Amino acid sequence: MNAANNKEENKYLYEELNDCNDKDEIKLNLRSETEHFIICFRENDSKCIDKVIDALENNYSRITINLEQKLENKLIIEIHSNIKSLHTALGLQDAPDWIRGGLGAGKIIIASPLNPPPGSNFDNVLNTAIHEFVHILVNKINSNTPRWLNEGIACYEAKDNNENWIRQTVSEGISNGEIPTFKDLDTGEDFKTFFDRNGYQYSYTMVEAIVNLFGYDKLRKLVKSPNKFDEVLNISEADLYKKYVDFINVFYSFNKITLSTEK
Image 1: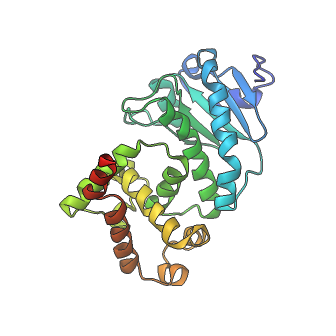
Image 2 (image 1 turned 135 degrees about the vertical axis):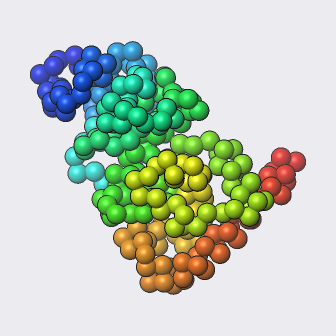
């Protein structure tokens, strides 16, 4: 680890934080630089930095190959020790407590894995750094990627959410006959509605289905032209939805869970 306390060396970072009110709360005076990332943090988060670095660097090649996109410059990752400083850095003073991270101006901002937000654990937060990294690459392909597709790819590649949470939600939806459509989860910047509609769980399985049924090449093309299902996948949006429902019925139904448990 190459950490430094030198304010002049981190000048770009302090300048980025000039607009924040509670500077003492969010000032990040240490950093560790790797081949592709610059991790900025405070001393009390030092114990988790190696794991953050490993998670990002160990997944870099896989994700950049899958999406055929790479970083042009080293990406800044900010780690904030508490919810208040996280929300301040994100510019979301009234954000829900469950938020683990997001994107700032040319950087990733996440909670500390050592102090996970309510409902999350160390690994959830750790993989949130990967989740946000995926968003950056997807946005390089198409900055107007629909919410369901953008979040779905990030969740699928990062595996930052609990598998049982996803499986339980989708299984209940199958049982109740309440499976959201792609349009239902295209909520734009309305993250609350996306969350309330179980968007993270369902979008994960939507992308999982597309990758398994059509492959990554088609997924990349769909990101470029997200409204051209017929042209990209040779199938209508309605028929893709039917294939998606068939897919989750096979892999996420309660019967599938029962069989897995019995094994």
